[in-house]
Length: 558
Image (cartoon, rainbow, N blue to C red):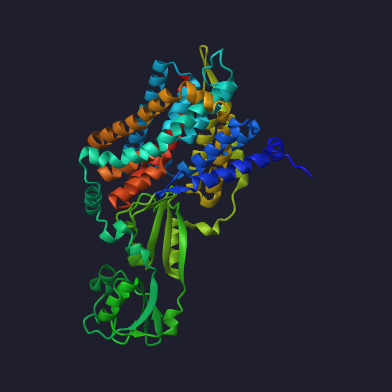
């Protein structure tokens, strides 16, 4: 029996898709000196290869991926979108806008001067910034009729131009940005580790917080008998155990009475206490309190760890220090994530809606703190598909609404409509946790799967004309991509440094967020020897995704 493998792959689109997906992940996971391209780049390259040999996917495959991806981007941005103007939020919005506007202006100006088509112009912009939302919105502008179309170029050819230009400029947009942003401190004479340490001192981040060592230790529960004359008859507030050791007394047993201590509690000799804290803290506590004892009642207290999504209005916009999570609730913050980026853990770190905080502590006291923060992530395992489906439907409907201004049709397009409904539902979800449930893991799956559907379709479509594009405008387009990648970074750096007065470590992190480049953020973090830059990245990333998605529509309308 003979099996025509090539014919089978060509005739079964779902088989083709998962082959492209598999090879894409394989390519993306290849490491060269610690650097890997990632799944998005891998799937794009695999799609280009198969597309060059004439393999195709149905158009609706790309459309479904586009819808899931753009809507999920809106959901992710929603919780923080309307609260960003607190404190330095407006600065992050301004920086993201400046970077986006500079990139659009450069792409449009270069394309006009060089005579590039609008499709090439949009591909140049999205590839140079490695911005998939820009690419998706540009293609949607063609399908929805918002793009200014040339009579000599069909919609399919414009779509192919967008994909080919994106593929040509994407590689430098990815690798070139990593190299360029790594050398900015050297070019400007800035000592990045020193800048990060300076900001850490200003914000009172401890050295342990900067390298994460303090929170790398698990919390241990131990029991002690009070024998020290120095601590007996003194209130806990005066003893400052937490400040000195990082440990918290969770429960006290005095004769037959068991109770949770407060700041005014006075310990007496003979009291038995349970203490939760890191190993090095316990070593200090034993010297300060008295000998360790084996007490089943004290040691049987259940210790829990929860990932908590911040949604409570009393917690959002407040620092960990203001919440008194350690002193009042005896609970430890182990990790804080915002937009899938880990932030420094310190009392001066300000929480925002949508942050995921990992807490460890005694179950009863921990539950009190959770009520003040939001809800436990693992308790919400089901996605509200009703709201999810109608949210997408509403976005598609809004995107079809256009207004005539003379001969020009103006509207948001599908990308704009999906972004708006995604942002609104994401925001309402942060206010009312029972509404529109989409757990972070589910949202990541929707976004990742949608992105890979979309990139596979882009690669297969662009692969049909990639060789011709490289041979004709390839070198000029590649050089143009270098300009569109690097100049917005320079403009953003000057604007952020001298107008907004950002600390350099925060600024470089914010620029990587404005360029929506997580690999570049990792480069900055390593160069700074600190997680401080992640604060800047989290400030601009969500808004840059929205602005760059709109930029894809705008550049096709110019």
